[in-house]
Image 1 (cartoon, rainbow, N blue to C red):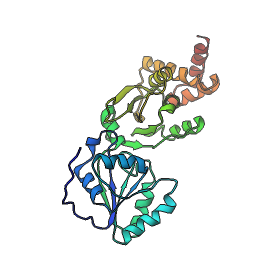
Image 2 (image 1 turned 90 degrees about the horizontal axis):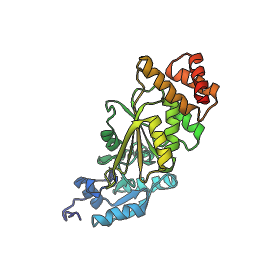
Image 3 (image 1 turned 120 degrees about the vertical axis):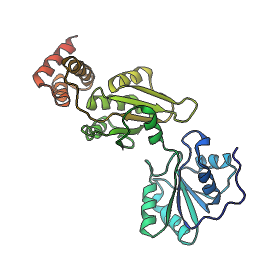
Length: 289
């Protein structure tokens, strides 16, 4: 249990963006605790979740729900509180607010109204996963959550087919196998990592190429916990014939599970830059096998 200082000073009026733990309570910063202790009000994604965090650090403050379903109604009230001289801390259920939640609209309107916005940085599942994955970190793109429907999800991945930055997205554990399969159809056998339960007791990182990962979770079923998927960006492919043949076979094998022979051949031909006649011929051989 953390010891809370008794000499916490009152915060100046403003909106305080406070990062909270993504799993391990020990990851919240001293400044984060002090800000929550001193704020006049805390706007949170789920009051029940934040109440547990507050109880863990012996804190008691007014909690108001702020999420995508009530944002339009709550933003004016939160901003009015600050404009009347109050301080409001914004938190999400876990990690840094505004990352895949509606907090940015509140920050946007705060700026428009001349309200001071202060960050109290800390944990982020995106950065935590990136630091563990062993994939390039010099350039990365966070995509949020993919669509639920297969066609929309494949289109979503297709939009990033030529992006050379490392790709990061969140996924529901029950949809993980399907989204990895769709990613493999679009990206082929790129290196990837599935990170789950970050900072918790059963933290796990599973690394392989996308095709192997899709097969793994298809066979193993949905894992437990919160999921972050990281995929290497587009890069120039090895022109070695054996490597190209292996890539073609593996990508075709997966594509044929979702497409006709003709469509799979056209897709793989364009993806791997191999003559369509060659790919079509190999696709027919694979279907016979």
